[in-house]
Amino acid sequence: MDTLRFRALRMISRRGGSNAAAAISTTLTLVALVLLAVPSLAAAQHLPMASPESVGMSSDRLERLDAAMQRYIDADMVAGTVTLVARQGEVVHLKAQGHRYIEGSKAMDVDDIFVIMSMTKPIVSTALMMLFEEGYFLLDDPISKYMPEYADMQVLVDVDGNTLRVPAERPITFRHVLSHTAGVDPSRNALTEDERALMGRNPTLEQSLVARAALPLAFHPGDQWRYGSSTNYVAFLVERISGQSLDQFLKERIFEPLGMDDTHYNVPASKVDRVVGVYSPTGPHNTIELMRAPEAREPTRYFGGTAGLSSTAGDYFKFSQMILNGGELNGERLLSPTTVNLMITNHTGDLPIYIKGPDAYGFGLGFSMVTDPDRARQAVTPGTFGWGGAWGTVFWIDPAEELISILMVQISRYSHFTLRQDFPNLVMQAVTESLYAGKQVIRGYEPIVR
Image (tube, rainbow, N blue to C red):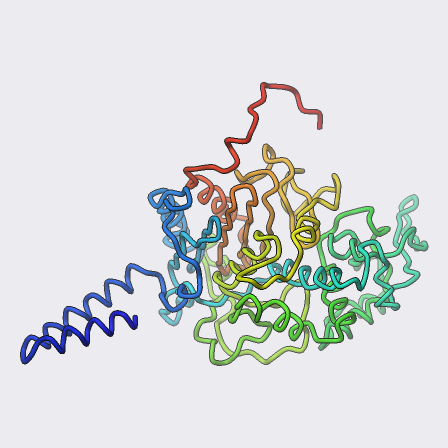
């Protein structure tokens, strides 16, 4: 924009009288055309931008992604989307479509702020692994090393139809809480009334988890994979080990070094006009209705690990690119490549990651990964990893293709359509020069024992 202003002044200074007005008109037209052609220059200026063709992708094929998002918007199934695709460290696609707030006639912009729900988990898990690198714990250390309230736990077991409580066969470890195998979410039906009262949310995470320490575990740690509150324990461990609140640790150790200026637990009042409304498919034929308006909210002191952060596509790209780079971005190293590899390795064996669908996925330390691509819902490369949020956001990182894809959307329920499954497929079909396919050995048919 500074360049355009400079050109305008030069044009006006070279012309006099009536020609000045023409110069101004021409320049304003130029500015308008540039603003239409480039998605939010202000938001994109801190992102490394390149053409798709320069990194082996197709501009024409990426238009299919835009068309698919628009179909969902036109069908009144979502209000709007922001999609980001990056390859080999360059953002090649950044597109805002639809509205961030229909009722206020506010169009979506690429730097709008979304509640990312469970996409908080990989960031908080990264924070704990930074402390792992500083030697504060081993993965198989019990969490009672820093959370003594969780020593000597009891476990619910079924014996001939009766629910009994027995001592845990092993302690809850750091690996268990990072991989959702800790058993910290017992069924409410197996608890007493007094115990059920302990499951409520208190003003702070510490108060909540200290109260829950009196509850039995759902299973012996390590025996099952169960999605739930596990990453809250990751968050609390960050606070106990570091001596800082989680929001302060994340700000100082992750957000500021990476330039994630728009990622917050408490979105500042000055940024509320960029917050996206949350919609619910409660209208006729699952069409959307406003569920949560974008407005200023009372600041929270509850800094959870399971959810809580709000962010932008650009900020989450910076985090994702740091992970894809092996723990470093723009000279700021947060993790060693060996630690990143540890995090994106399957730590759950063949335990079913049931919320992902078929037995095609594993879970590491903060991320899920595709372990069996021929059974996966997404047409992605083996080893592709990522996670999603309960209000529609999702991201995938493909280390083989050096590819990042991020979808930002706000919809409270989406099981009635396949937007999140369509998204990675539409990104992958835009790859025209594969870094992985040439290394693949095509095998003949052979039966696979399941």
